[in-house]
Amino acid sequence: MALIELKEVSKLYGFGDATVLALDEVVLSIEKGEFVAVMGPSGSGKTTLMNVIGLLDRPTHGSYLLDGRNVARRRPNQQARVRRDRIGFVFQSYNLLARLSVLENVALPLAYKGMTPVRRQKRASDILELVGLRDREYFMPRQLSGGQAQRVAIARALINKPSIIIADEPTGNLDSTDSKVVMELLADIHRQGNTILLVTHNPELTRYANRVIYMHDGMIVGDEQTAIGNMAKGARRTHYQKRKVTDDDIAEGVSALMRDVPGKELSAKARKPRPRAKHKKRSAKRLASHRLKAGSRQRREKTRK
Picture 1 (tube, rainbow, N blue to C red):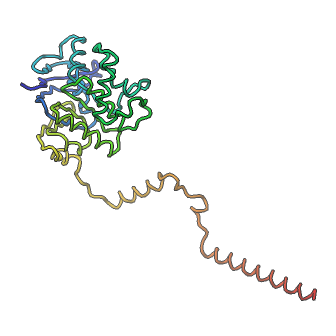
Picture 2 (cartoon, rainbow, N blue to C red):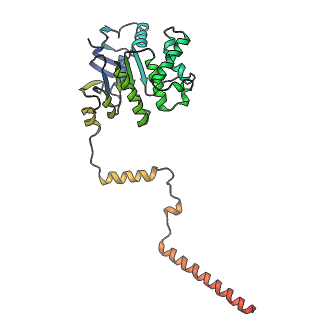
């Protein structure tokens, strides 16, 4: 039995002529322990699909089975419990509470389970040790780097020991070094048996997945099995098509660079250099003037004598 199963799931937003079809009869089955990367252009329905799977949104049509149970039609309080206990979320913007310390942010989900403060903090401290941030327990979110903040967000997602981790562009705001740290951490979580759903625009990140789903206009248009460590063929084909660069492209790029590079603005004098001929003539006049002054000085000295 599949862990996640969507049967002809559609999601509509708006009314009348303003209706937007975000998901169009999506059929999807995900087994326990898979690392699934979801790719597609902006507006293709990736985030909406994750919101439906994460019980943050209800499908307009179709059914969503989690471990064989239809959870899409449950009451909001029942969905909240499933979401709290079974699913962990990692967002692109971290979503840390600015007025709480790192330890308090990570421990916050446990407060909704009625756990005592001492047990919450002990559990949160152990999770921070797992992501390598125990020495930042009492830091505030503003004191963290982007990579550290994302690792705190991952620790918070793991605090309830969920079986499913949904990561929506978790490296979108990070540089390449921090991105690698975050992805290696997700890979470790996957090796422990968790199911990972990763939304990304970066084809390089498909190396961490064993399955890649491609979306377009609310539909799944491709489903590729791939070996961990290899970039998915579909991602490589879509994002690495080379276009021949023409002379006009080069000239346009150089022109834009000259306009936009800061600190390179030329002064009016530098933009209009003096012609070399005038410069030479002016130098000759200056030399003749010096000679006349020197001759006059010598004649005055002879007259005094």
